[in-house]
Image (cartoon, rainbow, N blue to C red):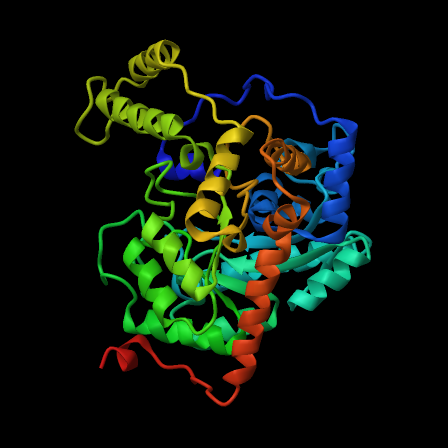
Length: 426
């Protein structure tokens, strides 16, 4: 999967032991079902579409997504059966392409991913429906279906064109992540060396146009400078579609406390990510150690104790991993991140952004989309009220969307046109 590709390593723990907390009792299960029946559980980020393309190619158009035992889709973290088991009410389906794909090819590849998502919704109208607004999500959820929106996961995907951004919105994209893993023409990434030291002029123009459209500005993946600048610039609340708390796990993909505090004033929301290195400091440290050990044995083209000797390098890594087993993240770690965000920013500024099917390992108790109830059960054990569970599930995100929609209405007289990067840099 793409996180393994980006890290250049393979995490251990695919066969982790079962979640050790008590099973959900009947009364708690009924309570969760009631809360999520009244308020849609909205996940800010799921990479199902990209995984369909990667695993099945053109066969995805005939692949059964229902999740019958033994069918190919069950190898993923998402299918229709498990979505219903997890009580999902709304999903931002991620539209992701590699950062190495740019220009016109990036636009073509992005449109192909949008086509997959819209095709899935069209194939299963009894399960999914496209949503354009917060009210659409509520209406679709009440009908028993899953409201479907899209999020473009990287500003490189617009091909340096504001006009392309507008057309993505017309096709159902309701947020764009300003960067992915590297800097682009809009902004600096959290996982790259600073280039713009925040937003570029083109990035600032894109944020303003997203406000005008009613498209949420997603500041997951961006540097802390970009987070602060985007929050200050945006007329609408921003979102973190899939990030966690940096105070608990010191990973650059997470949100620092000072930025969490800014969300209180600007009314944004952090959708908490489930990826183990983002929610467990021990796992994060283990991944760093494993990466260093990999480089020690084999770091092409010139370095490494066993450069050019792949068998010896593989044996050495296997021995290291046996002596240093991966720590295990659990649903409790995710709950800790949620509660930290509540402590700093308040209950009105947190949501769920699992990153399912974009991550190769998951916490115990959150192995796939069927296990959202385990997270709610953990929070119930910690004393959470139904009102606060509903805010986490979707009420907070719906509020942010409604505010973005109101800003859009107020800006209808401000068309931007299609300025080039050169135009904006003068």
